[in-house]
Length: 245
Image (cartoon, rainbow, N blue to C red):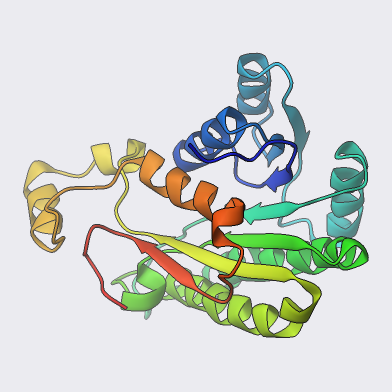
């Protein structure tokens, strides 16, 4: 059983399927979580479910207010952020020759630039205590590429490279930066895939099945714990053997 007692954790993208699973795992492990997202109703629902949970509505695309957002997170968590989990992100798929510049920019701005700006702000807080962990949720397509997702794949690959650079910059300050890269995970989206296409996708996965959100949550909980204290600059793939790095 992984213990995360008394750790203060900021989790973005907390209201989605994977976010919910991460949240459940972290709370059950004893951590103090600040869950953020854009959907007020969903935030209320998770607040009702977990009575001691802190929630904060914020749209990470609002770059001019990210510094204020980080300050609010820090204040809510009693001026001590131990761990930041960057899980929020979007897709806006299109074949590359049809992809509008706005579709490219929006995905890059939210998935990559917002992650950088939030991380930058939180690292400034972590430097004061010379301790902390950043965990960035990426995607298998950031390594393998994917048809119709040049923007998304580029944003996720960028997060991996950014994380390695941050790990090099702040390792001496005891700040660890790692990525978790999910493959196909069971969600509302995968339920909409036709049986024929589902079977095709599974045939490309060594374990011949989609992952469960808890598989991602378990990996993130490990990286949050002291069991991972000598790991930084790494990407852990959670894809059932769909892709080998």
